[in-house]
Length: 251
Image (cartoon, rainbow, N blue to C red; front, side, top):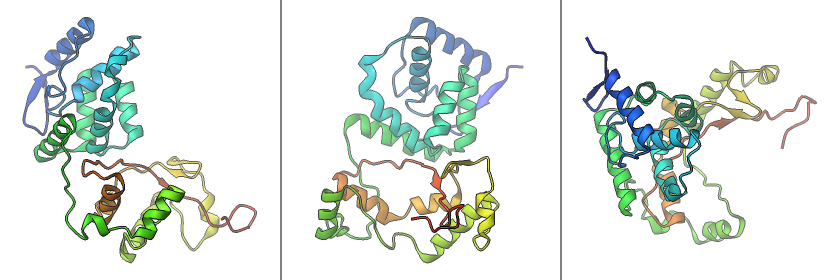
């Protein structure tokens, strides 16, 4: 009996067929189209994996530099996080293993995949769709003073994007992940596998996903960039203790 790889989109491919297909593609250096659904039913996934394999083999693809935005959109829309995505791409030379890892990590439903594919196709065609539910009309989310500050300083601090409860839940998540206690500073300096200096390697969690869904966040970016064709980048958290090892307050 042939083993098959099942994907949420409802299709299946035999392991043997995937291996043969991948080898044929790489040997001929023929790129599939972005709308080829051989990557677990997800647009552009197979093409992106193939491009990485060709580049790892020493082939230069300068003519495809314009696809970086589409590559990045796929990474963002899948919701994995940049670093895990790049590791999956560059550490998996076997197509079947790569697709299985992506589907297991993302846990995308058929509906999720449909939304991703539509967004990618819109991006390819230059179509911008505003998907944010209306909280405030986009032209008045930011005040004139905030816009002036943005143009002058290059950053903004937006107050009250998250509720007090959301902030408390997010802090609790960080303390839990680090095995530390907010009221016990001596626990703030324990080494932890997820910490890289002040960066906490935590990309996905229901609380973080809920924070990212705050409508006002997207509306602010839509106003700043003057487009609704945006996708969220899943970034890690940071943890910087308020009191340094010397007992002084960190600024």
